[in-house]
Image (cartoon, rainbow, N blue to C red):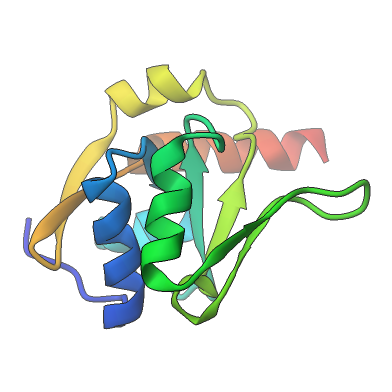
Length: 135
């Protein structure tokens, strides 16, 4: 599959650093679908992490000038900083299996000289239909 270029260099730097730090994550949602060739537009990139306490996550954020903002009673966890402004943290995927099970079936997409794992289209659809049916 040809490389996709939906990210600016600052976003690529963060994703590249997550890979260097061996952080387990998946790109999910509409951005994952776009990376697989679906003609769509999205305003953010959803990242699903195996564990938000992975030490490499904080190191990757520090490397690109971002910070991790803990969840509060009224807000979910999030990132702050120019290089990570595009990214949202996903803490649960409706209708899907565990992170480990979904990661085992993830697709590797080449991106800026490295690869990222994305949730396959069928699993994105399964999650979206599950979310709609429970709403």
